[in-house]
Image (tube, rainbow, N blue to C red; front, side):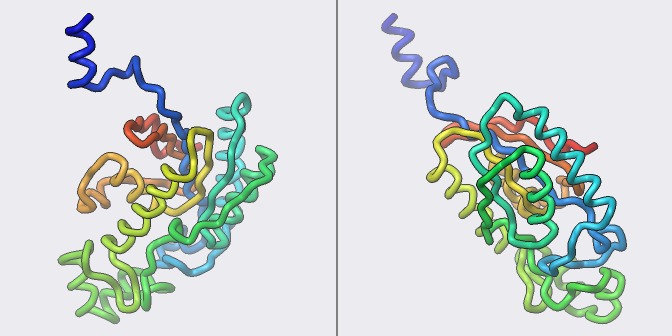
Length: 223
């Protein structure tokens, strides 16, 4: 018994784990025409197109089946129209009453490049484009936001979850960039792995999280 007690001090034992777990469903908004047409739109306020509405309804139906025997504490959404619209569809299906808007979940700003394609940017702003291509993590579009800056505010959101919620089930509706950064922070990976993750429109990622422990249950589930 003494040897077992000593081992418990030196090693983590999942059998003794009693901390409340937060179950999080990270949802990327449904498709917009900008997604479809390859337009850089960052923080521009595009709404869902018909495909995006169908995607939002499908992910809502999946979440309904996944959580029908669980109580959803709240839905947290980015303030942009495409995420709020997706969140509204989910809330209606799951009959959720509480929605929280959080600015830290907004997509990365692409500054003066928003509204154009990367092909147009390379032609019209070659100096800044080539600088960004060479070092995309610290450099940024004019008046825009770097991936490093995105990482800082997503970290802030991550910490706020741990401090505000002691267990429970939460749905978060956001964008590709913040969801990728949430996962990198969770896994303790360098931000230079940002481009190695794929998060599709209308997909969800499930995470179980506490202050000392986490499990990435599934990622980029789409329908």
